[in-house]
Figure 1 (cartoon, helix red, strand yellow):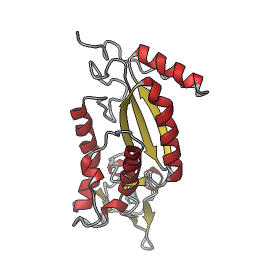
Figure 2 (cartoon, protein in one colour; figure 1 turned 135 degrees about the vertical axis):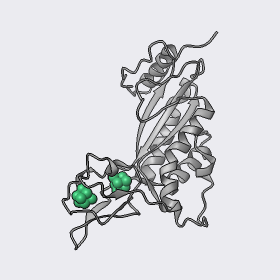
Figure 3 (cartoon, protein in one colour; figure 1 turned 90 degrees about the vertical axis):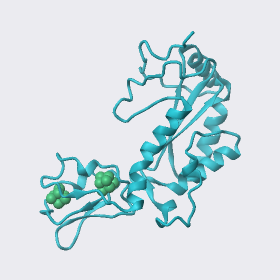
Figure 4 (cartoon, protein in one colour; figure 1 turned 45 degrees about the vertical axis):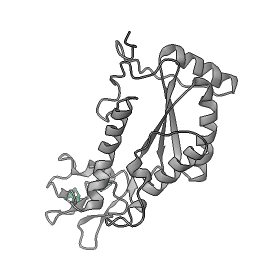
Length: 230
Ligand code: SF4
Ligand code: SF4
């Protein structure tokens, strides 16, 4: 993201950036720290800047950051797991998409106030794989290397990242243990969600309860959806 020269220096945009990437220059104009910017698009909302001074950068790194969310959701579509969208999180169509006797574990990684980098995503993915888990992560992300023409892509930031793993309810405590250890080593935060059909979630809750972990139920029932096709 960048700020064009119509900026009046009103500072209205400063509180909105989740990355703290917008600052005021000595010339009293807003400017974006492109390393911190994750291209989330919050600042380009017409309700934020009265003169619409924010513009999307068109260089390859910025385009890649913007495409990342779309890449990931395409990947999830292909895997037929939980189809999600930032605008439709409470009404997912999961019909026939959650396998019988399995749950889908979602690990949402972030580092509040700092975001994470593609390097974090790549390292987390590789370490989860070493532990025997198979996180649903785009191979394009796992194969990013330092020599890409678009620069130091591995150090570019994103706001958050989801890994999804399909597993038996009895494996849930093991993945919680491994994921917690790995994110702690990387100074990241993880939020863990388990999606499944009601009877499988019951089994998961019992397994976790036996291990001393209480699951917080969230009322996210997809009425009429999530059923198996016969
Ligand atoms: S809200 Fe717009 S005009 Fe005001 S400082 Fe930010 S970029 Fe400049
Ligand atoms: S696109 Fe998002 S991260 Fe970048 S400056 Fe705007 S609000 Fe901040």
